[in-house]
Length: 161
Image (tube, rainbow, N blue to C red; front, side, top):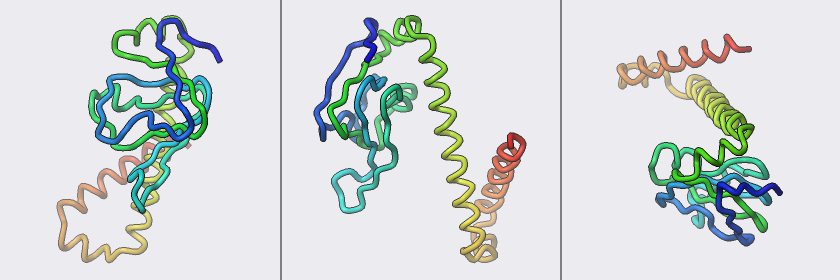
């Protein structure tokens, strides 16, 4: 575990909530030790784990970068230690560990790639199982926009493969 003097280290116990839904924290976390689960509908019957993060990964990046409240809850799955990166120490954190910039960008890229694949699969399922003609007739503007977005994304993904 390599601590960064430009960041503040924080420790969480197993089961401890690190970030709550609708909470606005102007900080992100680099996980030094442990694992964190991210949930939608946390504590409700329809609770779903949407992501699991481990050592070296980042948590709360989107909320930090976009300065907006979280939509999910993050919980320590085991004793966890993180570096806290704030607006004030952001620059010095990455100056001292430049390789972390690439890791952060790779994490964001992977997230975009997974969301894109999920979106394309949902669209494929919609086309396969829905009454497409009825949707086309009742919501022509929406369907036209959907088709444009789908085909744009599909072309982008296809060009890379």
